[in-house]
Length: 375
Image (cartoon, rainbow, N blue to C red; front, side):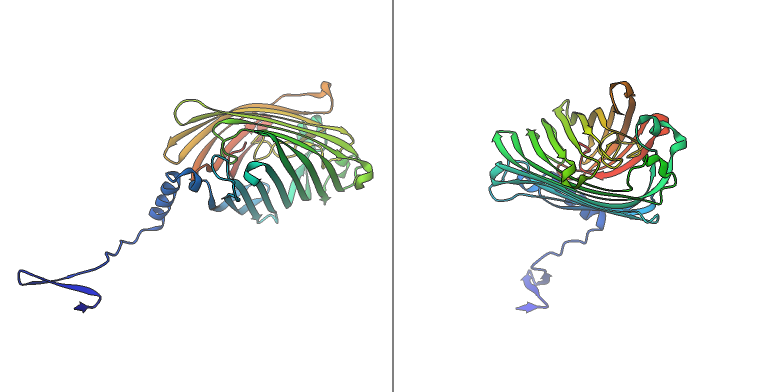
């Protein structure tokens, strides 16, 4: 006999009601989050490195003022792209602030056909009240040149790479960029260049990649070389040039929970790049702590060594040291130091939320909030 969905059991002249299904106690938000993370970090590799992670929150700095940012990371695998191949990765970020700053960015690193092809794409749109110091190192160093301008920027680039031998990929590269400077307080710093700039480029990319994971490598190396042409006849007007972009990163496990990572980058522009397409030093991935665009010139060289240490379960920290320079020729090179410290939270396996504080010369410093490692 069933009584109110309970079973009636008689034993030793005692009647007892027993629930056929025990009801689990309710868990609070933080317990659920803790269980979710722990489950993901302990899950099999094939499952843990995929799925959707979303993080967001407020931020503040002197330029963009109070803002809110959201980042979503999606790891996925296409057909026949199973472990030990790293998963494909889509990162989407959005940001808006009270200073009328907004930014939307999407990066997609796609692995296809059992790893025979790679396709990497970036789309970024932003509008921000920015600072501008002019071109060349000497102008960037001069604090009196600091001026305000409203900067609108759209960038799209993509490549399609074909595997030649294990780890080595070669393929075509396309680049398009639009920059617009409005309301600049000191227009003479543009040195007569047009405020509106469009750049169209085509070229070739060579990648050698043995990293175990794209989002948070622990071993292997990555070598990138691209040669891109921005000829005048391809709607580039007076600003035709050729760009060579080089990057070398290496990762090695040290002691338990520690990874040593090193990154070297070089960017060379030959010809007549505009104010908008020169090499810019400082962003959330390279020379962290320097204002992006304070130092700009035809060429750039940077290098950094970083120690990444797991501290407790899904918490970690990192320290780094390095430096770089922007220059017009071999006689205009000046060393700019860079160092910093950061916290890591493994929100998912091989997907870190990072909070970095970087600093450099002349009081340059900044907090950087991001998802995935800087390199």
